[in-house]
Length: 392
Image (cartoon, rainbow, N blue to C red):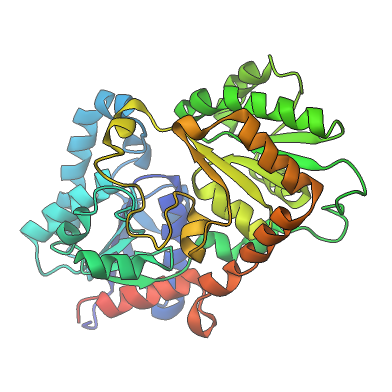
């Protein structure tokens, strides 16, 4: 770089991206000093660290087809506003964080109008699960890609994607918060076993899974009458969940908030969970689990045309299984989600024995598999790639 003040544009589209972006900014400041100019699109965390946001990030923080369509004209305007803002700033590097429907549209247009600006993507889209052709297309406008999962660099290499660097997953760095201190998770047989029930963080997931999860819990209770059921709920869906469990024969202990969720993980002996990042949280917490998922009608129709996780070394849709390369965690998709079957596995996990022991043993390897070399932090590893990509 020249002697001028470094300028870095960071464009995020939702809360998780704002969190990753803020940690990246802290790491960059530690290497460049406090004189960096930040602009782009961010939330409270990034703006508190000095990022000038082109607009309120809430304008583009929407999920679900219906919500996106309802706000589509505004989102399109925000894409072009972001592009214009980046071009005007002429940064040393542009970092786009997750939310590919928004951030990648920005990156493609910036590359077309200002090809001299290096572009770093932070968080790989799930090309290993859906639409693998995206990887090759990304290589046209993303120079370096920061991956959260250790198998993703190899996937992008095979698919012709951009240069990809494994920089670690934020859950790995905070795994200690999920792991029990002495006395938090009582030994099996010394008290009531604790079963976590995690039906998802989106209304559509809850609608599809909660009835079957309730029937499963009923059957577990028949086999283990003293089992305690804890259900961590996303705050804005708490009422939906309470309505859904009203007919259960077992009343779960519904908890909300991050700290209550972490405490539940630290006390749990097993879990019944929807597929998603929560399976990795449970695995890092050392909680054996059964995972189930029901896809919506569109993905069910496409399932035979595009095999889920086709680039994994195992036939699985559960992240810990894919990362570890073994089907240690039982998983059930669509019509396979049968309460009798789910309950059988959960009773085995809550009773102790070979199935529980094997899963816990396999999950204990996660720290080693996901560890970064040379003791780097996630944000530090990400900052190192961003600095290398900056214009000189």
